[in-house]
Length: 233
Image (cartoon, rainbow, N blue to C red; front, side, top):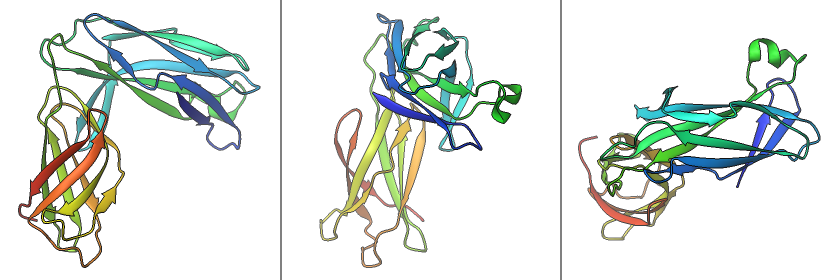
């Protein structure tokens, strides 16, 4: 379950929602999903739910309008201490060879009469991943690379050559000979098929600028351990 706080800009008040599940997974045999939003507050909350196609470019998420996914109801008010069922349905066939990726955008609409409600300006929005599996087995396939910048920053890059997403949750970095102590980062990030990401880590000055490092980490697919060879900085 995801606890979401939707805070209206410029006010001290905030709305709180409990959302379950935290992501939606569809497939050729499961074309619909049910989402439950609960309002534990003493005031009603109005929410607009909108699907979006999800892609990534230059390490940025790109959300665009889509008619591939239907969300019902698209606009609703959850009463105090109440809940709302939202249904998400896939309107197209899954891709034959790779995962399809979408986001469900949940945005609070401030109550009428508040400055934030002018022109239906949303307070704060959250987005939830919607993954559509292909009819054949798919999987992420990461390749890793690292380089040392002039100021001692360790830049680690990953590219997803696979046919499904992966969420890198965290990882440790150590020299291949294990002579240097471990450097840890917990910058979680999704990599969709065909996308790349990089992390910039700042080890202590005595951490050797090794040409080969070992990366051990956790993801939503599995734990991983890989070696990376450095290239030009």
